[in-house]
Amino acid sequence: MSYRYLDAFDKILWGLSMSVPRNYYLKGVVDDSKPGFIETLYLRGILNEPEVLASHTLNPEEVRTIVERLYWTSIDGRADYNLGEQSDEVILSYSFSSFWNAITDSFSIAQYSEDYSIKLRMDLMKKLRMEELKFPHLVKIRLAMHSLGDEFSKVKIPSHDGKFDSFECRAEIIAHATYIQGMLYKIIDDSRKATPKPLGELTYHEMIKFCADNVLLDKKLLSLVRRLTDLRNDAAHQFSFGKVSGGDDCLSVEPVSTKLMDGIEIFVASCERRYKLKAGRINRFRNSVRVLAGEINKDAKLAMHIVLGKQYPSQLSTYFYG
Image 1: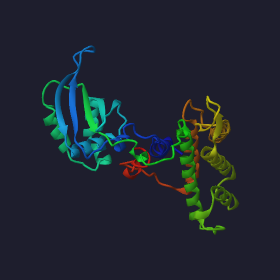
Image 2: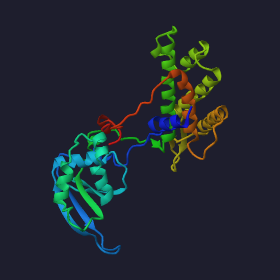
Image 3: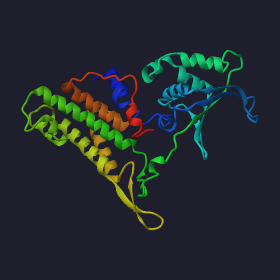
Image 4: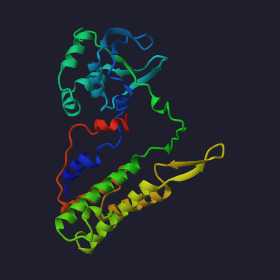
């Protein structure tokens, strides 16, 4: 397998960030049926108050477009929440250059936005007097918020939030193992060999056994896949109990348990030995799975699948990210 193949594989599958864009929460927080307000600021010095250069009342369509072009980004900024008796609002602050690049980048707009026009760009350039020589340093945007917490207003049962620390490593193990399972599915399907039950009903371990019994893949290779399957199961099911300060029991799903960490170390070491893969300082698990998948792909014969456009379907925002 060439490095060129590995680089492409990394970018397309394993290299995609599994975290949510930093500004994705805006889809769930901002009420885009109401107008907003934007102003550009100029800083004369660190100790001076910023000077307002221009301001503009955003109509709901402009609010909707700005949020749509911001939500997939992770540009640095600040969000302040103003919770009032009558209405709530979020006040967003960004460096102007970061904000402007995010909402006017043609390639990104074409991939992530429903509105491909340059109307917003032209309108803001006019309303914010962008043709003037004094270039803004900051932009501040005030947007109406949905009333957060209304979902529980009629619920009499007190909610209970679990203790979830950073879960990315578990999610990455599960995602990679699922992809490898799909590769085994294709190899079995392409072999046209009769399976003991419908292929879609075979468990992961049954697929591994079928490949071994029918010599579809090398048994030592399949032993690595079996280790990965065990890691997936541990990642999905391990939890632990503890005590809070008052002595009551608590349950936590930590990023990694001792058992899971031991399994990761054994799996990675086995892959590094098999493929003569040099142990890196970071991404050792991901590197191992990349090469493992590359060997399996000699039989799966899968093409690269490049996905351009939205990685987070809008339907999910109301259930998870928003």
